[in-house]
Amino acid sequence: MKGILLLSHGDMAKGMLQSSSIFFGENLPQVQALGYQMTDDSEAFEERIGKAIAELDSGDGVLVLTDLFAGTPAHKTTRYLKPGQVDVICGVNLPLFLELLGLREAGGLDLNTLMQTGKDGIRLWEVAQPQSDDDFF
Image 1 (tube, rainbow, N blue to C red):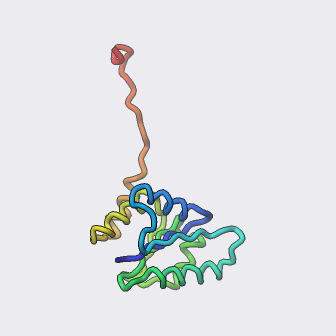
Image 2 (tube, rainbow, N blue to C red):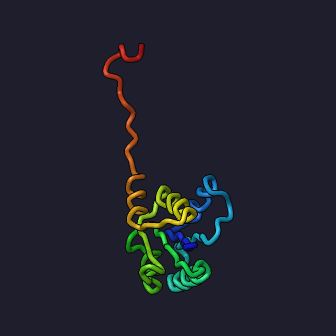
Image 3 (cartoon, helix red, strand yellow):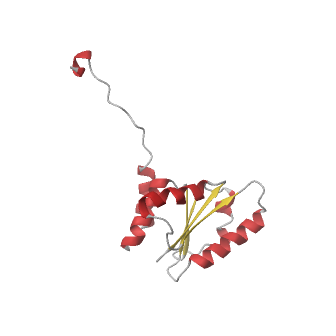
């Protein structure tokens, strides 16, 4: 099973992991969340990322999900990148993460499809407006 590492500025990654428990239960195997705090040393954070990747990789690799492209959490993954083994998707959102958890359990994982799910999860909620007052009666 592919490991999953969520990385974010602040506690967003931990919040996403907690939110996923509503859908997938608690104690998800091979999933961790790390948040980069303002008081963190960036080199120590990079070491924590490396340790988490090593813990999560059972032989099928690790997918790292970060909040921002080129932010500190994403930047600190670069030394661990190994295409097909350790991949990084930047711009994670909850729809993408939940889709990943479902696909991982089902055994199929296509990164392009996964990223499209994240994009499709961003929508403007529009309520249809009645054409006239008569539409209410």
